[in-house]
Length: 136
Length: 134
Length: 156
Image 1 (cartoon, rainbow over the protein chains, first blue to last red):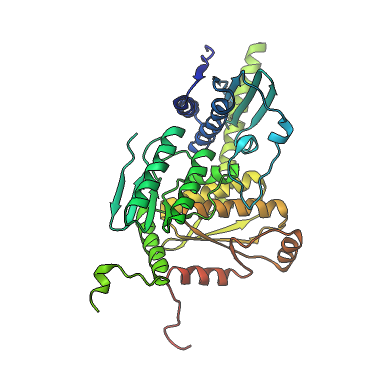
Image 2 (image 1 turned 90 degrees about the vertical axis):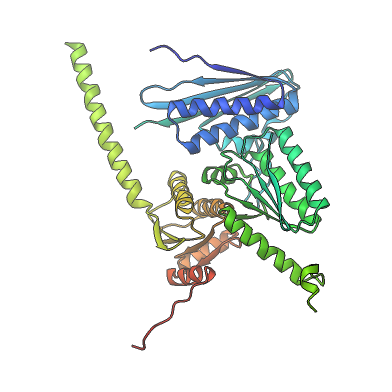
């Protein structure tokens, strides 16, 4: 079985955010994820790629199909070479209360996926997420 | 981008049927506010049953539209939110706050008319076609 | 010889997995039934403990049913949930919020005295949702909000 080719989406303008999430959703659908998970992934990609435009101007989104016979798995890496996040811990603080704050930011996005890894320093910000479901 | 915006009586109906980019969403917000301000709009209904994804940005703009419209003296109802969208907004913590929602367009129109009536009941203003009967 | 043994094991694993899958489906169906109590009125009797995975299932079933049946009110009965703590309350509130965002009203019934004490002492804010102890009260309020009245036809 050949390894699926990852999808690379350059993120340079507003419309690329739409493209990236559409490709993510399509791949999730092809793999066999349910509608709710497809939407979760699309939403997460939307949030992360938007951050790239907002804070770095441009970057890249790469989507990997890493499924095997027992697991549906999709991994996404969103990377930019912008100024970086000054305080990652603060950015990842979960300010969510049932009172409801708007704007998901990173903590909200993390709640949508199975895995979430972030590294950031001036010149490089890299967020890696994965969605995985066991196929019984 | 082609988002139908129709004025039906005194209700402005906006039907979002496609995946919009951030710029398009802001553009839509401007269009809506301008039209609410310019016409005899007592209520705004935003139909989103065709949208399969609402992220935090769109949620924020929907909230903003509702607030802006409220400042102009009108009510807003959002209709047709899909289950997956509702779940995800709550999961993310981006849920709509203080924005009225309805299951479908029919119920949405009922609700907006109820809200408009409620608002009118505390107003001395009577639309001219009713007042003339005195 | 060695290869033959491995193949047998994987076939067996597959059979086991299928049985597991069937069992899981059955358990899921049994544990989160959605009952159409009346036109556009749903009821969910929640039985057993509620962890985040189960809460997700409940939410998905509820919201799908709200869509399918175009339900305007849903009554969630938690009489059968043994422990109501902060986590369970948070899960339930999220379910309620999601249903409300779709435009449905949710009433949670079946709170025990202990649950009422615990949740209040924990400072959980239940002001956004109608609650009651008895299922009866919740159903009566649901029907009333939909414009129904229940009255006895003849004197017994």
